[in-house]
Image (cartoon, rainbow, N blue to C red; front, side):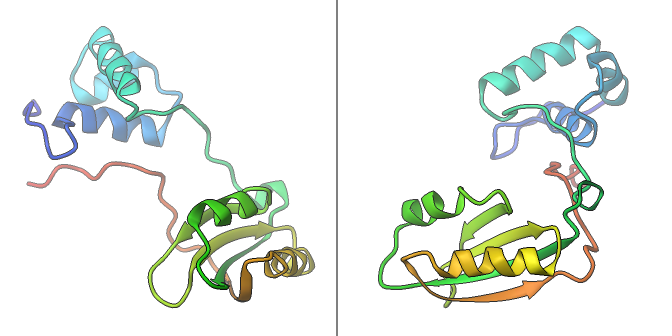
Length: 161
């Protein structure tokens, strides 16, 4: 039986175990989750409802294979911004690109790191050209992914010990 001790996030071991199961299979029933975490289906439902109310669980989704959908090329594009560009300005610009799957402000010389998926190299080139043409962008630097070696869903780590 898991101890009911909360960590700094306010999650106890059972909450974390439930989240791990759902992160790997969002279609798992409450009964299936309960079997894996030693709780009844109604107890799992109550905990999931609380996790949703607290905003820990924001939704349920599927993980897709980008290559199977025709997105064969992936790259990380670094954007170097002119002057002082706000994160809100950066977000407003890049969220219009369907090829951008993630964007983050980062430390160091780079201002914005963008993960891009494209059909092929020509498509990627067009996306990078459009990003470079944004008014706040001074220059870009791209790194094309050769092989995606590790891709993990957002799964809470297993408890230590």
